[in-house]
Length: 198
Length: 328
Image (tube, rainbow over all chains, first blue to last red; front, side, top):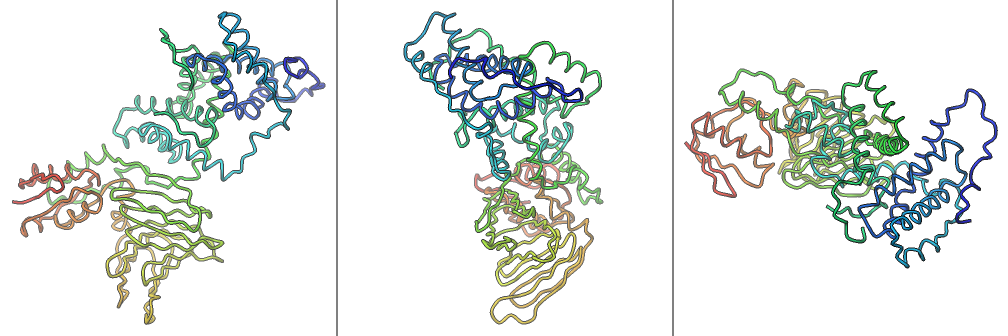
């Protein structure tokens, strides 16, 4: 199955006029099917690419390509589509940089993607989800956690958070922005129960 | 991560896009968001698929965290509104309030509390427990509670310290708090319980509750509480007094990390600070101990309090490491 990207395209049939736009379907699909695979994808990239500082760029490129494809037609097997895309992008990069570590190439060839039922990775019991979110919150840096807690849990506004934390609204903004980024990394990019480096 | 991060002149391109996306999201969630902003965001998203995926990824993550609001404690929104302008005995009040408004610190730890477990806080700690039925228990400093392992989990033992209860209404399963030889039963209320060496003090803020002695040989010592009631229960008696709700709420300052004093003797204020801090305040002089103070103080800033006592009351203050001695 590896490498036949086109086999997953098409076949969605005719679309009724009042159906949601391709863009909103692609977005929903991206959130539902692709993001829950991020931890696995990051593991795959970290394992197969020696330069850690490239990983965020690689992930971005993979997501952009997968999303563009979904705008045309929603791939039927998200997990397979994601990892085949990842593999192709890695191979291209290796060719481009003309540095192909033998073991990396071997790993790439050995890539097998089980044809799982869609969504098998994202079955989450509501209660576990809340626990997971709490665990994510705990992993934020203290000031950042405080800002996110006041903003997201207690529902306070920027000025209220600023008053409580004794900092400027600009600083509150910065903590919240940092929190938004870190939470996405923790919730999607890291396997559950992994300790985060300080 | 494996491998050595290469020295790179600039951060990865994806990182700067992600930062930009996060700034958009933060502004939309917390800033003043106008139609013009919405258009600018759309334009930015349309610039490239890279922008879109970065933004959607953060947006989905942030949307997931909306569930966290289930843990909301109902902290008073504005710390200042609790600080009433009582006629001050000393100028201490104004100065202290200004500081309190700035440094209400010490954020809560939020815990989803399964049944059959014991939860505790250290000196200076605070914790909010959310029970399976949505009821909440806020633990003050140096406090311990155990939650029953039965089906409903609507029975709690306060084994140490002080806790504020916000109980979900359930007519079929009354909520019970056990404190030594006493039992508090209620149906959907807000109340504060503080354990004492010889019993407990219950302050009822909302709803109704019943306090009774259950120990061996307990006579029919019971009282029905209504809002504003304060029950003092000892081994031998249960007595009830009544105060304005606003006055009761001064006892809840700790939920915002502050201590609220109103015509409080320096000795009593010191005792209050000592519950929250390892560094103890000692008032060495009887005459000094009787001075009264008004004001709102951050519970964790014992030094701030001592400094104000020195500067405003003109007292002699000596920091001896594990304790601060206040004298004339």
